[in-house]
Amino acid sequence: MKGGLVSETGAVLHSERRPTPRAEGPDAVVAAIRDFISHLATAGDGTPEGVGLAVPGLVSETAASYAANLGWRDVPASDFTTLDVPVLLGHDVRTGGLAESVFGAGRGISDFLFLPIGTGIAGAMIIEGAPYGGSSGWGGEIGHVPVFPDGEQCACGQLGCLETYASAASVGRRYSLRAGLEGVRAEQVVSSDDPIAIEVWDEAVEALSLALATYTLLLDPSLIVLGGGLSEAGPALFDPVRTRLVKRLTFRDAPPLVPAALGVDAGMLGAALLGWRAAGRPDLGPDWSTDVRSAPSVS
Ligand SMILES: [Zn+2]
Image (cartoon, rainbow, N blue to C red; front, side):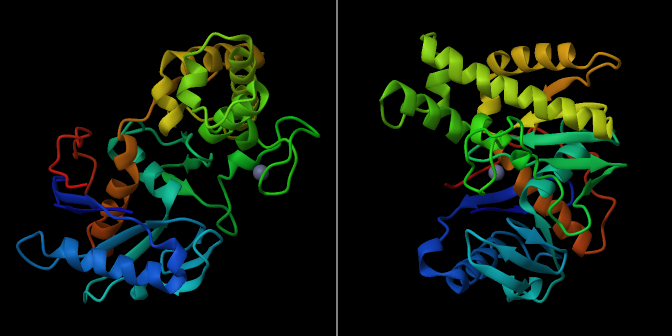
């Protein structure tokens, strides 16, 4: 878990990480979040005006409806804090997308895709200026778009999902399996020029370019923002994906592919925007700085 106390000018006054006590059950995680928020609140001069949280799974502004990996079912927003202030919840990836949209790589752009590629892959579809969750909140699960018919089975049960080929975890896993090694990480695969690494990376790039072509044709974004751990690969990721995306799209231009601006802080800063929105300040954010890594941090 990562939390911070963020001022109305976007200054991160204090930020901190804590482990998620997942093994202790769903209620223990909620209790740990309550403690964490109370602790963060003491880092400022007074009581915060609002609280925002970015949480995984199926989420509305007022409840964490379902999170498979945390065991949550219908946890109301008010359960997450004992502070007497308004609270807003957001989906983790869409909240990161909100921050990138308001003052990050997508600042001033009304339609774009924010795609963090890490252990898994999920997208925040920014449509007409706001993250779009679809009719039931599952919108943006681009990691589970089938890219190779009858391909490898994904943890979700489907076959040939994007995430199975192109997440950082999958790139490491697929290489390790073929090379007969254990625990090779995606960064090592990207920077290696052995034939197995080239093949595994090529399949990841192919899967990504297919999914991004589909997204582009359906939603016509003016920008695609790649984030997450795998985006640190830089040109080794951006160049081949861009080339194939351009080649795949015959009758229209490909949107530019750019790196995310807020890194691992996107979720926390998006949650801060939600906190200020909860406090009745929806106008804050456009003038916040992307230079958040210099903020004081205790980890
Ligand atoms: Zn899947």
